[in-house]
Length: 232
Image 1 (cartoon, rainbow, N blue to C red):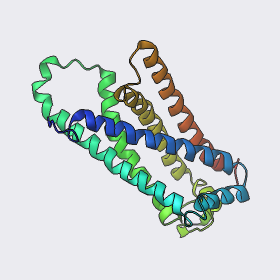
Image 2: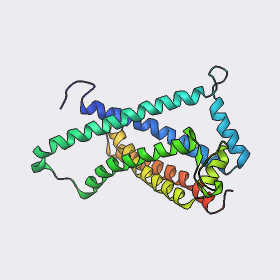
Image 3: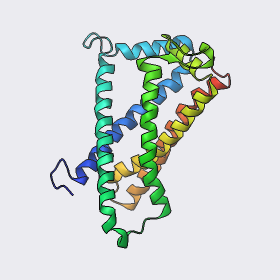
């Protein structure tokens, strides 16, 4: 194991925890905005979308705040993935000499594997999500009668989730996100020293479960409402 400060496992776990918490704050804000504004209708959602692009004006240029946020999130993704891959490689390399002492439970083994492969699935989903709703803004939903570019944020979201298969992918991704948040928040609280006592551990586990559930459910409500006609 490397002993340098920036190469130690402790440093990498801390880096994962900090970047993970940045994601948690972002997904909570993103979930709240979508959940609150989509049900307010076409005009309210588009005004919300436009407001995000003008935050900080005139001190910042148009889209300035979003650009800063995108850079922070992009760097965080890179550092998070790098830390996860490096720690996984080290654990894999050390495994041959740990068999005698290895007593992992089935639940722990599943949790570890899920964080790794669930994280890969989420990364692929995020790339797809950005392409569809932010970078290219193409509509593959039934409301658009096939793939096409849509500039109206509300129409893009509604038309996309009128497609059952796209909604299903989104729901599965949010289930994966919920499980990832549940394990990740708990692990981060341990890494950052927030669980020194049994009471603190119970609180951390409760917070992890509540945040994961609220975020996952909050994200899937609008797509399901669109699919079943609650939002048009």
